[in-house]
Length: 82
Image (cartoon, rainbow, N blue to C red):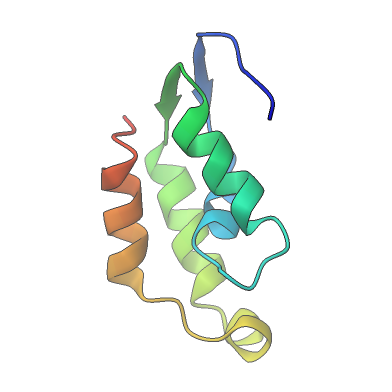
């Protein structure tokens, strides 16, 4: 797998959406990146709001099912992102 230089990044909301959606083809890649980045991962409030907006939208739910919002919060806390 890829290695990443130590630095600081602001994670795109799509990566968070992929990381909490087990049926996403990018699920494993997103989680691997977040767990193995090696630098500081930053998540802005806007990222959290965008992620929640996407995973609670009726169209998203129709295609991917309901995502447990508490699991989204737990995942973000588990990653120790700032």
